[in-house]
Amino acid sequence: MTFSFDNLAGSNSIAVMGVINLSPDSFYSRSSHTNPCDVLHAAEKMIHDGVHILDVGAESTRPGARGISVKLELERLLPVITKLTKEFNVPISVDTYKPDVASVVLQEGAAVINDISGLGAGYKMANVISHHNAGIVLMHMKGTPEIMQRNPCYEDVCAEVLNFLSQRVDLAEDAGIDSGSIAIDPGIGFGKTLTHNIDLISKLGQLKVLGKKILLGVSRKSLIGDILNLEPAERLEGSIAAGIVGVVNGANILRVHDVGPTVRAVRIASALMKTS
Image (tube, rainbow, N blue to C red; front, side):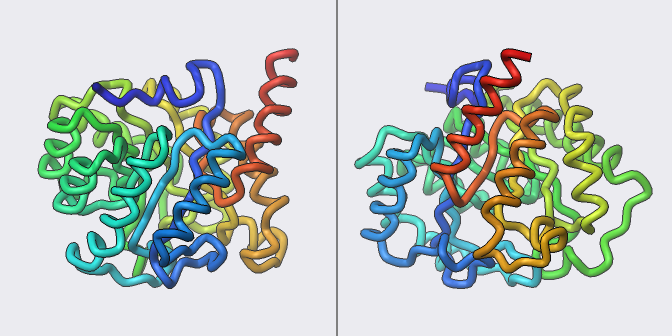
């Protein structure tokens, strides 16, 4: 069966993606789980709180992080993905940009690949997604996690992100990936300054021209810390506020660490937006 982002929360609703990190060096330590049993408990709570899709990552992509091998990434992922797909009926997304990793986890039942490189591996990754009838999140990133925050510069960040995502959507569809299986992500915090991030969120609706669901990941990121001067553990309210502004401006999916509070905030925002 072909995965479709339209089915996550209904065509007119906002979906919430819950973050589960398997890497020991995530920027937000409370989201890290190295024990499969802990992962199952975290997933169960997120599902109880109303999550629509789980996003599992085994390689930290925080600013300054170095990549890990395919072998290590799969060693962290496989025990968890196998258990999650057997225990729960919620779609599982895997945060990876490596085609070899994507191929294995999709065989194990994952439904989506969340690719921070936006198909940086080209047709090798796109063909893997197409072969498995899977979903793909195409994200924009300037550089790599290790160097992306070293003075990122743009002439027009919104135009450049739109142009990049447009090209990668074309690549994905040319490889045979179903149109409804593609979501786009402006990549908040991935090679952007505070000003770049604010511009992208405030003009998020410009990405609607691509005709894809828009995923926004602002949860506990440096954007929130820069504005509030707070550490990740204290950024809940700021994350929810930024996410709701994103929803008002066109986001269809929020990628978050705090599922319950976000689901409740989205329900209020959706009800008020429908009324207005």
